[in-house]
Length: 77
Image (cartoon, rainbow, N blue to C red; front, side, top):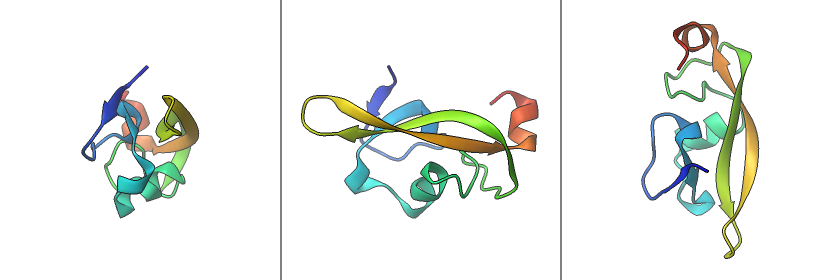
């Protein structure tokens, strides 16, 4: 399981995020509007795995299917 994040990360998939502290960029990444790796691309053609936000007080989490761009997919980010 990924580590819990107190601060924003570049790649949204690297941690479990607090949903009340998400930046606008992280929200775009979670909702598959920009590349999950943080490169900023909106030309998303590949499934990029999952990103997680904390849910409840018992350590639960919600997963979001995220997307990545062709450049990041070819780099194996």
